[in-house]
Amino acid sequence: MKHFVSMKNLSEHEILQLIKLSEEFRQNEIHPFDKQLFAANLFFEPSTRTKVSFTVAQRKLGLEVLDFSSDISSVTKGESIYDTARTFESVGASLLVVRHPEDNIVQQLSEELSIPVINAGDGKGEHPTQSLLDLITIHQEYQKFNGLKVAIVGDIKHSRVARSNAYALTTLGAKVFLSSKPDWQDETLPFPYIEIDEAVEQCDVVMLLRIQHERHQGQAMMTSEDYLQRYGLTIEREKRMKQNAIIMHPAPVNRGVEIDDSLVECDRSRIFKQMTNGVTARMAVMYRLIQDGGIAHANDFSQRNAVNSR
Image (cartoon, rainbow, N blue to C red):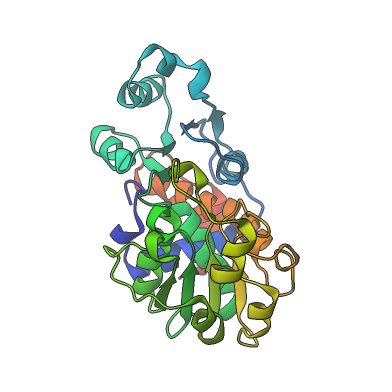
């Protein structure tokens, strides 16, 4: 694996290997790399969970973190994202983590740079590390994907999370359904749409999405209460979910909009567990890229696992 840009590019075997590696990191608090390596986090959009969990993951791996803030960088002087990325590559960054509002910009960088590039969310494109932590959360719950029914509910048209998860879950054998307000549907995605009431009764996982208000500028919006009642997860709908079904959300959560406030931390909810899994998911991705790219060799962590796998 040279870069981590899209879940569409990964095979079932590759995804399952990353899930397995993430679980190994969860069970072993070990710094795999002794060599000094630098990871650059280039975030051109606001982020809490993704940026913080990448930082924690990098430090757990023993990486030096090169932080970046677009509002106090040379971007304000007109520097292109390519020149910014090349600058970090030139000064010795071993890998780049990039979040940007433009679709496909991370893919372009991966084709132009010699170091690994990780997509931390690009416009309405994809968010593959969020997808990986979601998959880890589902696997911890069911120990399988084949045969599961997963509903992705909400602002499909503007959601990079929806795309990454729909592609990956299908690769792994799950059946994916989409549910959305009609004008927020994306007909380019080859997955069936169902109503929210059907989704809660049929699916093993109900994955809610944030309404991306920043991408709806100038559009008329219904009230939060109206949206929740018509398209969100209400208390009444939660009661009709399958006995062992779970609730997920990539966060940040608009409480009382996509989901009733009381359900965010209910027994079915795995929302904060997803956040916990974000650290080991991102550790697994960076570890694999560094190993596969020959950037550094692992210490006794990988050697022990190699012995155990014989």
